[in-house]
Length: 250
Ligand SMILES: NC(=O)c1ccc[n+]([C@@H]2O[C@H](COP(=O)([O-])OP(=O)(O)OC[C@H]3O[C@@H](n4cnc5c(N)ncnc54)[C@H](OP(=O)(O)O)[C@@H]3O)[C@@H](O)[C@H]2O)c1
Image 1 (spheres, rainbow, N blue to C red):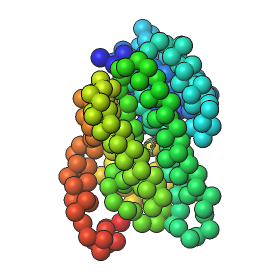
Image 2 (image 1 turned 60 degrees about the vertical axis):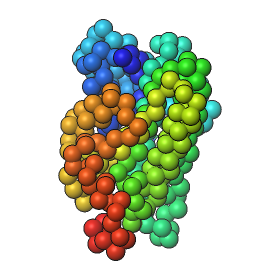
Image 3 (image 1 turned 45 degrees about the vertical axis):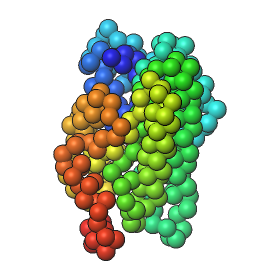
Image 4 (image 1 turned 120 degrees about the vertical axis):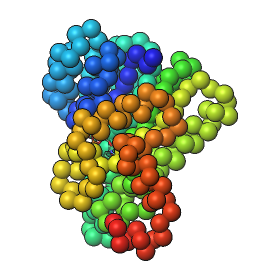
């Protein structure tokens, strides 16, 4: 059982929701994000759900790369070994290419890809040292194909993250390492990230989505679309569609 779990981007949405599920399961939690007031309120809530667990919180901006190592190592000092590290922090601020919003696309690319790479670097330093543990990255169904408009840059960051995670998994398999690596690819789950997005087919509420994410993660597969229904078959179909069909649907 993965007793102690670090989650980045835990101040809202899926990160906070997964923390609630793990608290109810009796897991110790290491939670970080930029908004400390949110993390403090969440810690109180989690200890209310389960007073027997330990909850450590630390402030972290994942675009501050040296701080990632300091915060992750700080959590090891707080809680001992980390059994699972969930790289979840992300933004969805992309805008169509060539519309004067390079700032938004760059912020999305830096946070979701370079920030995730830096988190993977810090996480793998710890997991290699421990020689055990489970690394989970939160990608997206939008990673499956190139997406138009506001989702172009976001989807590309998630495709990059999926590829990084797969490459790491193959390397660890080759070395017969006991460290496990999972890519989670959520469909639409209602959070602050998509509260202004109009076209969100098959969207589920955060509790339903987070339960599905935790259930999938506990099985430690190579990759999982969440919720599995309907996103596993949708992702399969998306992978086969000609671009003309993608242009009609998305
Ligand atoms: N909701 C969906 O439908 C969906 C679908 C597929 C994938 N995802 C992915 O799931 C992850 C969580 O998203 P969400 O839906 O839960 O959105 P959310 O409610 O907006 O949460 C995003 C989290 O990321 C943190 N974050 C953002 N920028 C950060 C930074 N620079 N440094 C540290 N933390 C940062 C935020 O914390 P602070 O602002 O406090 O720092 C917040 O806790 C993201 O990677 C997203 O791409 C979501």
